[in-house]
Length: 273
Image (tube, rainbow, N blue to C red; front, side, top):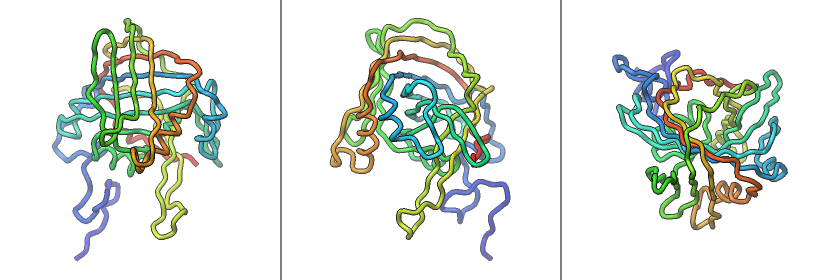
């Protein structure tokens, strides 16, 4: 007798073995504590760029909002419940935008690309909530001589350097009252109908995370650089890295280093139309 999908359960390929465990569906009997997991070190840098250049990478239905400030964040996470205490690292690249659809309107940060150094969160995040995730080799964070140093690459080609220096204690960043959350474009190609989309939809992670607690934050002076790549350097993502490398850095807008714990699983993710 063939199997049937259970209503309300999350599946991923291969579906033939039952509902799939992950960050939004842990096995019965496994205790999780979103107020303690994960532990996170976030290193962030921001820069002002040319709005005309940035608009080339804004999807239909979106417009830039406010100053064209690009934010790059390294998130080093450990003690993750859904990975049985293991960890991984992710990189976010975002800028402020608003979305206007047939029914919905929202404002927040547009998450343009993410890199992660583990397949499991890439697969779950792309499939379930529409995160634009790619793989990267991400070095461990390095604090030396008052500098927090972060790097990322792929098979020997380093494509991103970020540093925050002159660190000093600072209060937690105040959440933006005007932000509805994090916006992204979920896309999947249609098999056999090349150039057509099977899924093309805007998704939103609503703002607010009551499980997250900031334990310590420092602010400082930031620098960053995306290194241009040839196709041979990055065969599947040179176009992404080069687009970011071509954004002019008109002015650096500082950086920060934050230690926190806890966070939501993004089960509140929803589609905007």
